[in-house]
Length: 89
Image (cartoon, rainbow, N blue to C red; front, side, top):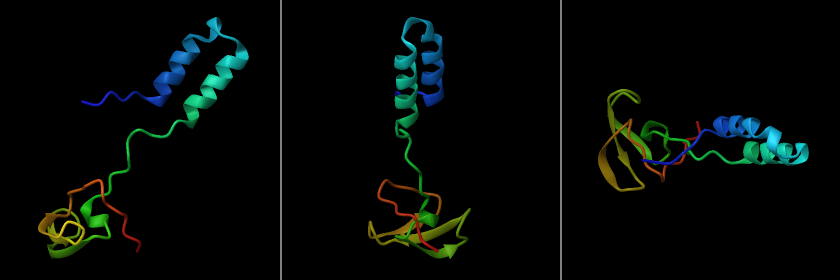
């Protein structure tokens, strides 16, 4: 299980600590929290990936295709991997 926290929860915690730190320190901390990148990557499903080509079925729902990145057949349209690249259409 991942140890992710919500950015908003961290900001709310900083609000609770506002009385214990300087105003400048508080706002600097808030800006740093807001600038943190998302820890959850975008999930690109196979049907939206440029490496997947539909062979049978529908593009979404039930569909099978070929993944040319992995050289694999019978890949479901709702699958995903971290090598996915969004299809440009």
